[in-house]
Amino acid sequence: MSAASEAADAEVASSSVSTAGLRGNMGVLELIFTVVAYNGPVVVFLGFIPVAVLLGNGVGTPVTFLVCGVIVAMLAVGLLTMSARLKRPGGFYALITAGLGRVAGLGSGFAALTCYFVALLSAYALGGIALNTTVVDVFHGPDAPWWVWAGLMLVVTTVLGHFNINVSGRILTVFLVFELVLMIAYDISVLAKGGAHGIGFDSFTPDQIFSGSISVAFLFGMGLFGGFEATVIFRDEVRKPERTIPVATYGVVALLAGLYAVTAWCFINSYGAAAVMGAVDKNLVGASTSSIKEYTGQFAYDAATVMLFTSSFALALAAHNITARYVFNLGADGIFSRSFGQPHERHVSPHRASLALSVTALLVLGIFVAADVPEGDLYARLAGLYSYAFVILLVLVALATGVYLLRDRVHGKAVGPAVASLVAFVVLCVTLVLATVNFDLLTGATGTLKNVLIILIWGVTLGGGAFALYLKRNRAEVYNSIGRQ
Image (cartoon, rainbow, N blue to C red):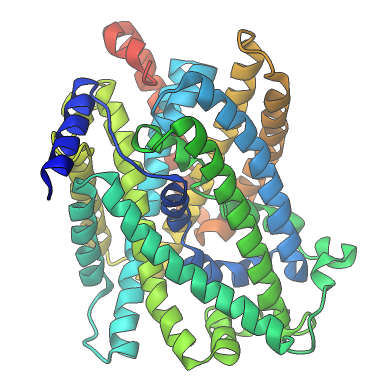
């Protein structure tokens, strides 16, 4: 390392430690790729799109994805307007506190922490399964339990989480580029070969758009955009946040909506509008990979098998980074041990929060292994639980941004973004009701387990609010700092 770069590192570290904040140098593309990697595009393509087609509105699925993208963009307008005025780290935790008060804010902070932690656990479960499949089927290596590979992922993620976000950002960028290349190559191949019976536009006709279960389709569609809001949690770790965060947020929403809508449309055409429902009903797990093999070849098929793991790993790394920053912010406010809110002197990373998160994840995964929970069920239920918690967070932040912007008259020009947020709030409330009614479809859990999981996620949220009330009565100085205020 040169003397100049060492001096620059020292300057950044010194500045960040003095303000007890994080620092980084991510640009627009690195931030977009970090957040989109959290969404796991190849995971969505291989495991999510066929399910959305089967259980949602079938051939009309691409339009549902686009409509959901518009709703998320409306929410993003208010979210970014509010974030620009607060100029405060903390993500949803800080924004909801500013809009709805400290009680709702700490409740949302606990909900966000749980949401992303569950996403992290599900990524470890899926990654463990995917890596074992890759080792056995592609490289003809030893067959090992999923948790062995998941443990290896956890170790690597922990090491990377110790360093500055720029390190993870570069790795996630590389992984995401390969994922995008695979999906774009697949889309081009289907279009170039004319699909199964010529390229059709049935997906965009009213009969198909309003077919099947629109409510379930919309529920799945909203779940595609998980992580779009994570751009604001990295506020202190990007270059020129006033420009980088808005461009990256809208870029993430546009990329996800366009990529998934086009890929779903090509997937439908790969079988034909008349045959795709039968294909996903007969072979839900392998429908996407079979289509890749037919249209893009054996190499792409093998690459997709490998990328299911790399996509899972990228998802785990991104989820780890986001979750660690919620732990860091809660530590900085004194909700957790303040040691978690201290950045590394050299790397300016949430190193203690990151390590505590990994230890907790290891303990929870150990409990799952000891309980002999089937890995497939584990991933599906955790992913569904994450989706449900994510909708709760979106409802809270939509209301918070709407209320805050209507109340904030100083800056002016807030009515439009406020209305957009409140419209999104109404739509998201409907989505939350649908998610509760269809919780069994989200998680695969029924009966007592279904009720326990719903009570668990609401209990964490309400418990955070109750803890805020406790702090108000007993530790006023901590209560006053809730939400990075």
